[in-house]
Length: 353
Image 1 (spheres, rainbow, N blue to C red):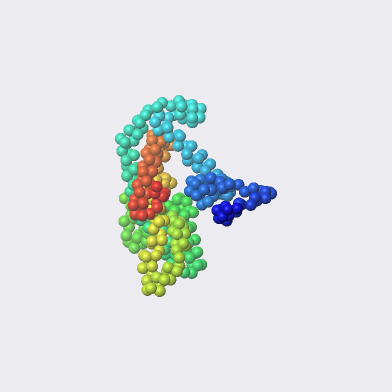
Image 2: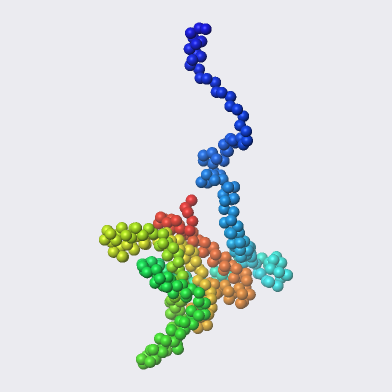
């Protein structure tokens, strides 16, 4: 054997010994879905595994999805009557009546543009919404901060219960309470008469004061209920921040300004976007009850106008046209408010793409 053959044999690695066959389960090669960067993976779990993991949550949401489809999305198809002279007597059932009704194109929308009652109702709606945005929206925030500052847990629970209670009252009861206080035979008017001020005090029938009366009623009924979301946001604040600020000499107002309000800012932005999106929806029951006392000129809003026009007068196509315009403008308001929220650095209703 030559020296070159001996040196080559010394440098070459030994061949890998043959492994005995493995009994039982043979390991599979690495799946393509588990490769790094696979779009089907989220958090290292495939869609099928997430579906199996969250099956109970998905089952719990199915009734809500079904109700949303039945009561919100399927009725959208009925908006086609806004382009017709719809008559419920044109056939047996809604769909046959819709099929037999005459098509008129955009005539209902043209009528809406030239309808002065529609513009009056729209103006009243915007005025009521603006007043509620200015006077009602800050009240739940202030109440939540006030309740959060109460240290005794029993006093805090009692205050929350008292503030929640008016939300469960009907509008009939709320308006009756206001009638007993601000009406012509109410507590304030009786006190004025007892002191020689018999000038016919009755704010419940004053059309000029009605917009403020509506706002006060909404505040009294729903401001306490609105604090729930803000209290939930306040509960997430780390209490060590308050303690550190107090050690550094920050007073109560400085802690609210630098800790509490920044923590509430995302929730405030979200609810503000939703409030702006609902500017054309101010409710109907509250106005229908007090409409007779102050007159339709002061109490007519879009919701009551659609009800009176569509249901009471049987002009279904015209009411549907108003509803479509109201829905489209509400969507545009939500998109615009959400865009402003993004510009201010907040997330809003949905994330930026």
